[in-house]
Length: 53
Image (cartoon, rainbow, N blue to C red; front, side):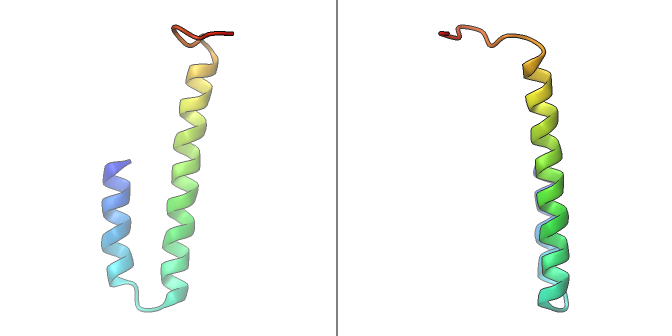
């Protein structure tokens, strides 16, 4: 994710207008959500260690 955020920052700085920046931020948000879903699914398949339920 660090590389994705770094690339997004560079593209935001180079974006010619607010619409271009919105497109970049939308793509960044989608990438972050996809990463979160992968993490959640990976941890859903196995119980958390030291969980108190």
